[in-house]
Amino acid sequence: MENIEGIFENYRTEFDEINNKRNRIDIARKDVTIFSKRLIFFLHRDMPNQNKFKEAQKKLEQIHQKIQIIADEISTDEECFWRYSFTISWGIEEYIEAVLFYYYLKDNKLKIKIRKKFKNNLIFPKDYLGGLADLTGELMRYSTDAVAHGDTQTPIKVLEAIQQIYSLFISLPRSAKVDMNKLSVMETSMKKIENICFKIQLAQEEFPKVILDETLPQIIPQKAKILTKKRKNNYDPQFKQSKEQKEQKESKEN
Image (tube, rainbow, N blue to C red):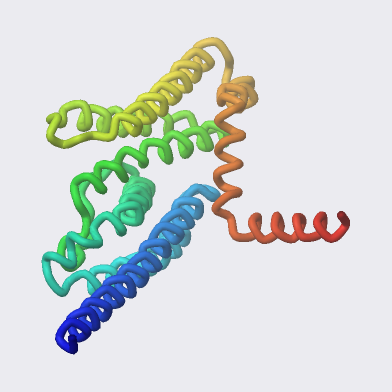
């Protein structure tokens, strides 16, 4: 009887340790996701400059610290690594999207390779492809904002980058198990930028420079403007705080 109790006591200790480790990893993964989204929002805000990239680099280092926490937690053995791989997948995807977007704006060209290396190679091909596919949505929003500020060259460069990513995806074998929903969204983003580039080309042929500057904001689909503004507000801590204060005030009045 004592042996059975001892066995179950060991099981309980083991399961408690597994659950505690999973909670620690999940907390770090959520931080990676939140910090990555905030980095993306920060990069969308205003036009790129050197001071902005220095601040973005600091934010990127915060994300790396959180990912390192995850790497240290799952570095004990291979079984532990695979047990928690699904838990960290979403955070790594968001990180890939953020870091590739950062390097695209900083270097003004698409860079597929990630420079940062982590213990145990946390970045799986599936997560990397998911983040790369999501990057096309950010590039589409970035080019939309650029047109609104009178920039007609950025959409052309962004279109080339998205076409490069799309060509990569459609050339992958079936064993890569590409997420078809992400591929569909990528096609939609590419068609939107193609449409914007087409309208810019027509406007440049039909209108002089003075009238063209007034015409450019009208080229952007109204729905794209609303979605971009709404998405930015969702990741803006100041907007969230003011929204919560407004809701609290309305609840008190009711």
